[in-house]
Every structure is written in structure tokens, then in C-alpha cells.
Length: 45
Image 1 (cartoon, rainbow, N blue to C red):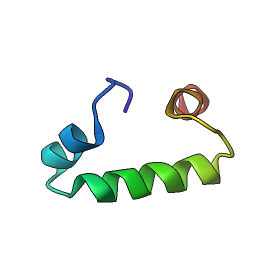
Image 2: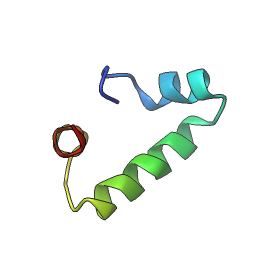
Image 3: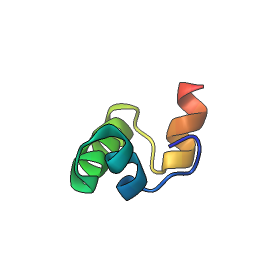
Image 4: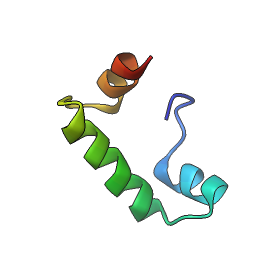
């Protein structure tokens, strides 16, 4: 995510489906109570 990769690219690199990447991203957004991937990355850095 930090490198700006798409869910498809991340999934391919990790050997998982792009949908799984999207689900994990959504769960992280909820967990950290943020509305965008940019906010999530800022909070995690």
C-alpha cells in the first residue's frame, strides 16, 4: 500500500486474490477508524 500498488498487484506478489487484499484493507480502515488508505498509511508510519 505504501508504494501505491493496486490490490491486484499486492495479491499477485503475496499469492492471494485481489479480493482478499481489499477485505484486509477494509478491516484495517475500520480498526484504525480512518476513511482512506492514505490516512491509514500515515497513522501506521
